[in-house]
Amino acid sequence: MSDEINQSDAKNQKRTLSRRGVVLGLGMLAASGATFARAPVRKFPAINERNFENLFPHKAGEWTSYDSNALILPPQDDLSRKLYERLLTRVYVDTSGAAVMCMAAYSSIQIDDVQVHRPEVCYRVAGFQIKDSRPVEERFGASPLIDARIVETQSRQRSENIIYWTRVGEDFPVDWAAQRLAMLKANIRGYYPDGLLLRLSSIKPDLPEALSDIRRFADALYSAATPQGKKIIFGVA
Image (cartoon, rainbow, N blue to C red; front, side):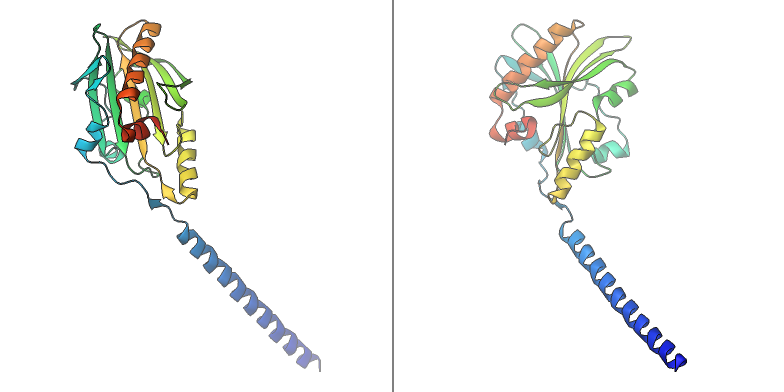
């Protein structure tokens, strides 16, 4: 009788384990299906070179643009070529002779190994000392409030003062951690965000004068930009 009871208990345990296995298996399949259903998709199409350049008018108020290859650029390695679909470099000069250097880099998709570089990295590679880098809030023209950074740099040849911002999807992250968080937020919503880096700089050694020139230019750029330009550059909804 004892053997029969033991055999019956063993069969019941097997059935219980079997049911648990089925439940666990179904749970794993459901989780896998949910993960697949929520996998981020590409939301923003690539922009061709001509259309990207048209986002930045050659004439913005009293500022006129000139193409330039003298700007500090991201290092030209395989990673950098993956980072940016489009890269634009110009110098804008106003009627008083003030000059603002403009570098814009864009990618229509931001994933783990494709994220915008921050200027501090590029300037150090180019031999500049980063004297200061601090977050600020800026508003240009009627733009939304933008989280940006002011960076003061110095090399043996010159100083360069910078205002730059990165836009990742709907956010303006001011550091790497915030940048990855912006990517994660977009992924949870079901898509890969696009990404823009806009760097505006002046070689005027006086910081207040340099920042004044940069802000005047950014105001003019906002006013002259097309609706698509306002959306991509300034994050206008």
